[in-house]
Length: 58
Image (cartoon, rainbow, N blue to C red; front, side):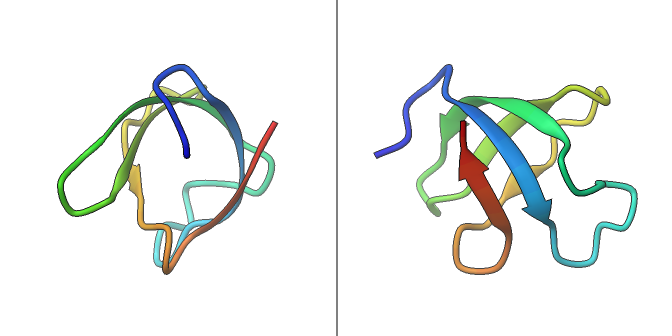
């Protein structure tokens, strides 16, 4: 289970070319649709969709 404050590294975010491989972020919360809302180091707040996007917990 991923909790608030978990550090993650992006591998691939579907249809979001401005989100590069290796970008680091911190989990803010997980919504009712199971999307993982992240505060990314590039200032973005795009959410991850676990079934579509690829990332790893660090």
